[in-house]
Length: 286
Length: 324
Ligand SMILES: [Zn+2]
Image (cartoon, rainbow over the protein chains, first blue to last red):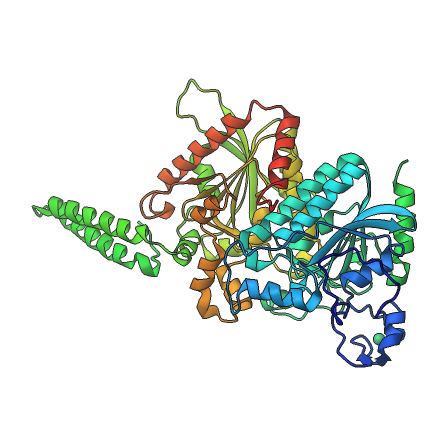
């Protein structure tokens, strides 16, 4: 599973066998590509940064693998890992929110849907938040909002650029109004961060929708997306139900957003580290 | 009198019909009817009190969307003088689900200095045609962009900003996505947070999700007594999380979306009381309460320096519902 070896800075992280299992990849040696239906050898996919070698389909990757791709080996240090979600509304739908949290903790080894920290990107130090779709669909509640807030505060103090990698269905409904408030919270802290004149790069990966898309993720100084990532405010099914018509091919995909002027660029996974390095070199005034 | 009755309002409606009937009799000169009318009115108020004493969250949600509930333009009509509405985002279109303009708050006392305000709010329609034109209060990106344009004008002229929130949510449409619904909402929040004049938000009806917070990043946030504010509608929550729309009432309760809930959770700064039976039974009293709250909030904020206003607002929002 491991692309590179990574210093394990996470004290609570359980050493679970499938902690690094990417979303959408079943057990076994072979994987069917959702892009081209080709059967791919899993090891080959891993070697290729979980991008289909035949059709360039970018599989969703978890936070651990994202960190390995972006940060210099062993340089990433996790911050604010002691933040744990609480069931502030005592929320229960078909399941108790507490139980959902526990299940996803056991599934992913993560305490919530984003990992925060800092590390080196081609020797340039940067603070970062990396979403993990495997934990409750990457949804943003109080802990995710707090991690983003604290990461920007840390970056203000240490004078670091910030890069956020999103993969999220939006606000976490089980935290009710508190999740909605994170939209304004994160934008508030970014407003303060702007005074540093350091770059905030928003990297949108599949999928980025709802309250995440409609807040901090859409006001990056630089807006990057991974190829074919689904990005939008409302989910495609909701839109179809509202307007009673089929949506055009490629609707809400990264390429569509680029064409409509919503993002600066689409960058393939293999090039993302180098692109970020180049941007930071250009934009940081030292 | 309210033409439309919610299920739990029906006992009130029955008494009101009787009162109406008797009033008609009275006109034709039949004696002793006055007293009977008075009795029935007392009874009606007692019934309203009984019903409204024990409203559950779902009933409050229904009141927040009552078809006779006053909308943004109703309040603007009652509480302002010389209001002039502005239109358009200067880029694509005029989104009529958002109204915005400048005016003076009506004075109770001629000796007071006139108070200028920008009022921006969601606008729902009353008739079928009007509802369509207002897109049921669900805005496209241009609505949020028109608002941003007006927020900046208000800042330029040092005019306090009032936002009135009343939307089921941002419009989930093809064109909305094409033209950057997410960015429009995020930028609206950003603009309000950074504007250097006082910003006061009042949720007057439905505070639906992203469309609501787009106008809700204020120095002071108030809710009318029977308005709601939520990350998702009770119906949406029931269908997505409970997988059963029949559990809407339960979802409404679980979401903690009433003014009382949100004051307890320290999300809002205050509740504006509504007249007996809800704002749709007396829009003038509702508007008077709204106006008093707005004036008081402006007075608290208007002597602060522009930079201080912005910095304090940012600080408030960085720390809202903070976990540590
Ligand atoms: Zn493929």
